[in-house]
Image 1 (cartoon, one colour):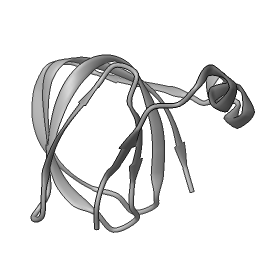
Image 2: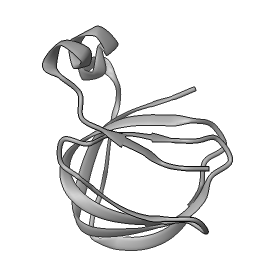
Image 3: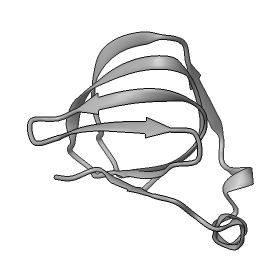
Image 4: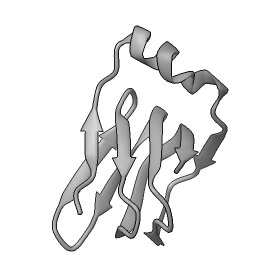
Length: 88
């Protein structure tokens, strides 16, 4: 299971209606997480290192990220995170 990180154009953001998605935020911290469903998100602020059994990725402001269903990982939030997110 791999984490997908891409950049979206403004048009793509509008087509996905990302502005209408809920916002989640988190202060500097470290915690384990398992995704019970696929999560798609757009990072609005911050920086986090996400570590899985297969990879370590750094996610920053502007990244469009897809976490696959069933993924277990560890989040290390380096700068407070704000993101739009959608499950399913």
